Amino acid sequence: MFLGAMTAVAQGTTDEGRPTQERAAGNRWSKLTRPALGLLLPVTLAVIWEIVVRMGWASGRLAPPPTVIFATFVELVRTGDLQRNTLVTLARVAAGFGIGVAVATMLGAAAGYSPLVRRLLDPSLQALRAIPSIAWVPLFILWLGIFEASKITLIAVGVFFPVYLGLMGAIQSVDRKLVEVGRAFRLSDIEMVRRILLPAVLPAYMISLRSGLGLGWMFVVAAELMGASEGLGYLLIDGQQLGKPAEIVAAIVAFAIVGKVTDWLIVLAAAPFLRWEDVVRSE
Amino acid sequence: MLILDRVSKTYPNGVHALGGVSLDVKLGEIVAVIGGSGCGKSTLLRAIGGLDAPSEGAILLDGEQILAPHEKIGIIFQEPRLLPWLKVADNVGFGLGDRPKAERAARVADALKRVGLADKAAVWPRELSGGQAQRVAIARALVPRPQVLLLDEPFSALDAFTRADLQDHLLDLWADAKPTLILVTHDVDEAIVLADRVMVMCPRPGRTFDEIGVDLPRPRDRQSAAFDFVKRCVLAALDRSLNRAVTGAQDEPKVEAGAALWW
Image (cartoon, rainbow over the protein chains, first blue to last red):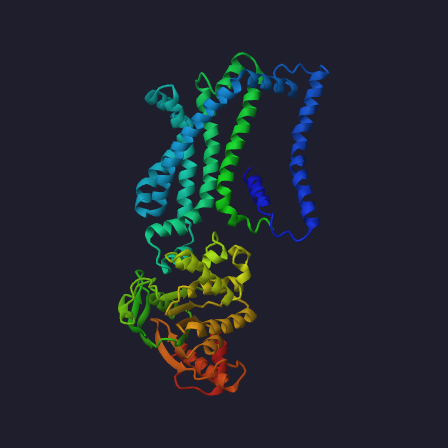
């Protein structure tokens, strides 16, 4: 997923300096064929399954064929159920992601920058990290109730660790030689952060944000499966309890779409700051 | 005037890197510091640059003690150390953050033209060759118009042809404003091509072993007999600095053998 996005960014920057028309044409061709090649397998399988069910070789009751899923999807959109539940889930992820990222950024920056903070904080956080985050759920429900607070907290915990670890590691591995350039040019502490540390850390930070978001989506499902009256996770449960597999698959598809779109938004937001990274790859 | 007064450096781990180096450098003078590995030449340069304070002794630039990086002192490292997230022009202008935008742009453009890379202003550092990147680093160091420019084996990572090219280029740039240059190198030819004075250091702890004046007109012909003579003197001094037992033995075969050994 990450590599795919990187090449997408790289392709976005190849607009200047193409030597020949021919090469540009070849590039456009491969731009079209490469994703198409990836679609071949799932589309073939879907078509086969459709045929199998249509011919009556299988009932398709528990594994509905693509047309049924599509019809269910359209129906959910028409009644507005899908949008409403997606928005609820999105709001939960946004809140959990926001809180998790904010806390992780502060602690990760402090732990990366100051060895004292790292020695104080990091062992405890590493110990907490060893606990599977879902194990917190009963405790969160006892502490925070069964409504939004416990769900958002669980998501925030899931988002926290990759971001915290990524940022701390990135700060620690900033090239000492570049920091020395900053010293030689007599940068103040604030300037050093702004002009050297921040840009140096940004690529790794973006990666950690993306894996944090991925975990956020994973944890929102866990949270919603454990009891929710709305949200995409609720659609999953609803589909299971009422024996509507098409609804489950439709909700899964919706998860995939919003997950991918939000991930892509992060990539898009970061792209202008990371263009320097892709120079070599775009060649 | 740059004055080094008995500069010593002992690292926290107990390594005695510098044992009282004294040196007076006139404005506009080019001094090459040469010596075997571990003789503290980089430590000395970093002390002058204010990056590592000396444990004892003082470094004075026009009477002002250097304890931290100083605006009149620029430094060029062995690697270009360009910031990969800034375009070449922004890298060159890195030390001019406090100047008005127009002045910055003008000085950057001027410096890039001076190092022959005007067409690379809008390019990322990754797209440069090694020699080009080091030229950008030189431009970056020269743009704030330092009075003293320190060079830490600046051309050692480049191939021989690019190296000779950049040495000539450096002299050319030096002639613009005639800053003081202090050049750490392990290349005897480079020292003699560039310097007015070659300071040979010896190790454990690092200190001045010998100073050899290079009184040759510029541009210097690397093939001339006079050049060769100075080179032999420097090689002989280097040889003696590393084998302190054999002092005085300066016959020619001995020098040649020592030169080979030293490399």
